[in-house]
Length: 329
Image (cartoon, rainbow, N blue to C red; front, side):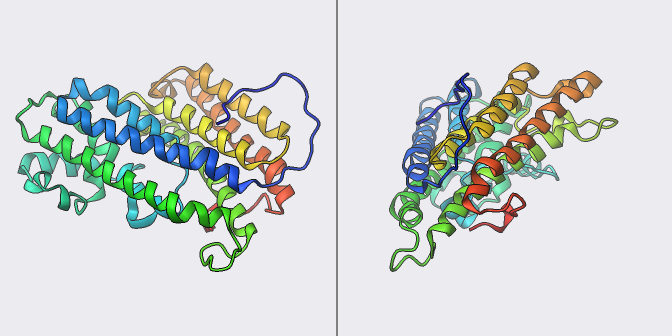
């Protein structure tokens, strides 16, 4: 798997051609396997010691792994709303807080029935429900025999189930259908172009989400910044998620592009430099004018990556720079 390392030498621009097979086998499947492993480790950790302090490291490992694949929203991740159940954000109406608080207050017995926990509202499942239980000052002080401990285990087990289903479907059907697009009997991707567009869409949509949501929400406006609207601010992961997302998207783009991508490489490097320079894990600095401008530079640098990808990948593939990524595959 390629890493976010940039060569100092100037690379002569050349057309990029889509390599769907490499994108699937060298990026998507390993990322999905890593999330399944991390989710399993998280559940096993909850069985050993469900207390908040003991769960922080396995929680962060699972979230890191999710960031490695969260941009793969089409197909199995989208099926049954799994992506939202794993990471329900943005949560514009505070549904996670209300749902989790209500379940704890009511001692909802569904946490004792793993087979039914998947029927819980998506706001009471996944990484953000777990974040609230592990990092909220009031909810995170539970003891081993408390209801909250059982809820931590139920959420963790539910994520393993979703990770297993995503892994099985990507490995057995969705990944092969991408690689063999246009083959006889492939009713999902009727031509190689459709498979190329699906991968390209994942890259562009991932960048848009990071720029518009992960940065746009805490930035708000210059006069009204909203730092507590940042993603995963309770667990101090807001900036880390931006960094991990960029790394994952760069890896996918490099696997997908069968040729030099000098414009894209340089744009990713500028974006990563702006992330590392910012240095504030929860975007609290956006409340300060200087911090706001620096975060906005970060957002603009990610927008420039979108443009660079259109130049190095989209145009050679015949996918217009204005392609609406929300159209899906």
